[in-house]
Length: 122
Image (cartoon, rainbow, N blue to C red; front, top):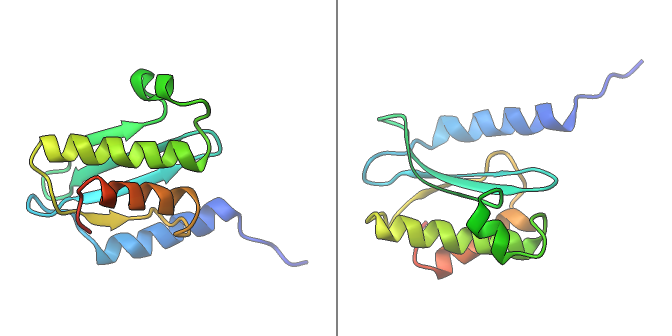
């Protein structure tokens, strides 16, 4: 019998491989993206200090209030603009993009493009 590896395990393994290549520093922190079936979240992390500098998620009250749905491409793009604005307020202009093992299309790509348009460089 052939046993199939779960999709979540495949994503976790991809994320581990990505994390071996990219580390967030104080000068250039890591923009980590996570998506679930119903929400989208992003964090800007300094891996040297082990601290989250900025975060945004569709679970936050002020972001959820602006959206009709929290699980579509438009919601992901809105989270991208919010995270970029919050990062620029803290003086963060350059980041390393960590797609979290997810395929760069759909919601993940929309978040990244919106963050770029709002002023983040990666």
